[in-house]
Length: 251
Ligand SMILES: [Zn+2]
Image 1 (cartoon, rainbow, N blue to C red):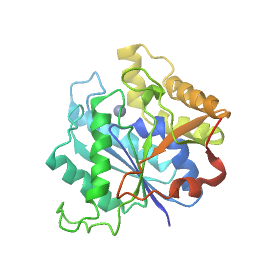
Image 2 (cartoon, protein in one colour):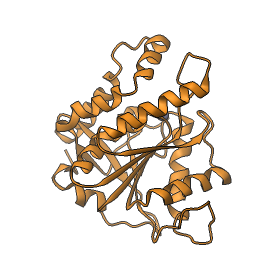
Image 3 (cartoon, helix red, strand yellow):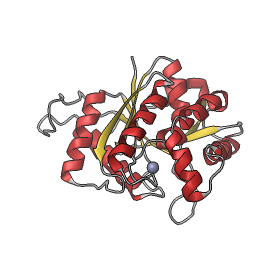
Image 4 (cartoon, rainbow, N blue to C red):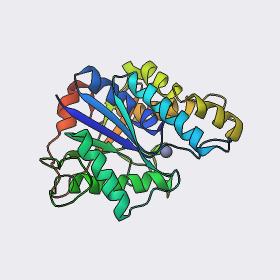
């Protein structure tokens, strides 16, 4: 069974950026694992971070369960994801635990420092996961480096405002209801965004982004992905081949 691991910084990022593709992959028979680096305990107006972390992890678990995926949190602090030795070892341990053939993570350049740090930590954890002498804990090293892909960034653009052009997109038009339900599982964020930012339609920005990426590829809704191809990572199109007819390679 193909094993796919999606890693992002905070609960609700995967739901926003890649849950449609993951839903399609799960239906096609893949084993899907969703991991967040943090529990997102800063995404709240309440002053009890431990309680917020517990609520958000429960929400992320419920969202993952909607597609039969499992969920785990690395436990780094929200707004405290850094590319350092301890964090690389913890990230490598969780990659080893998930035993993935494919890893999908944050774009190298996104809007939030935790996203950028997650991207580089996961990239390097994929490399380290198959090195037997790199000790991380109790889980055995992987037999080989998994295939690595980056999600689109939030807003589909880099920090300088220039648009990101992904390698390919996945047509998620048929699973938009499920994608919306997964995001809506994050009820605490609906409350937080309404109070903090006056956002009344919690899922609107996710839907607008999916529609915009869809427009680029001539479908109603899509999610973009880019494969990491540097040595010694595998360059064969494993995810593209698995998702077959849902893959869009040009407008
Ligand atoms: Zn995030």
